[in-house]
Length: 190
Ligand code: GLN
Image (cartoon, rainbow, N blue to C red; front, side, top):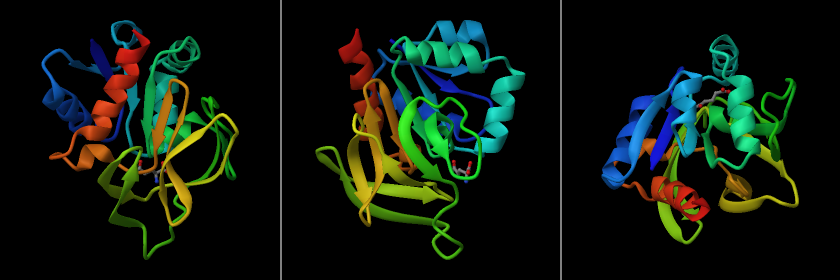
């Protein structure tokens, strides 16, 4: 099984390392081209800067192929900027992929709390969560399951084949359980 990480900008190497740490049966593939995209069974859209990522996806002609794969059911996981790209509504900006029924507000924690680490539940596990200039999810649609919350606001959500986290599980290298959760989404599809 091959898991791709969109490799245009952001925390690509960290995600690839996490995937290879799980099990040899999972190949971790950086995805920059349509051919590489065709070779993967699931895709991680990493954190970075969403404004840059959306421009680069356009330049690399990946917008339509990525969107079509997700619509066709390929499991996808957006972390932080990746979540922003998946969201239906982005406050003050036009949507990009618009496939996840949530509203988000970018850089919404304000200066003092810009970046922070805490701990909390994720599905049925308890994890450390690293937030880096994270967005806040201000609304979730009916078909969206909240997997993790911070101060009453959702920070991890799932809608069918789409997983999205406002925090960065690739930044806690000793704990690959959220990556395992994503791999199990791909396994259960196959
Ligand atoms: N602040 C970034 C944005 O708005 C996201 C930060 C991140 O991905 N760590 O795109």
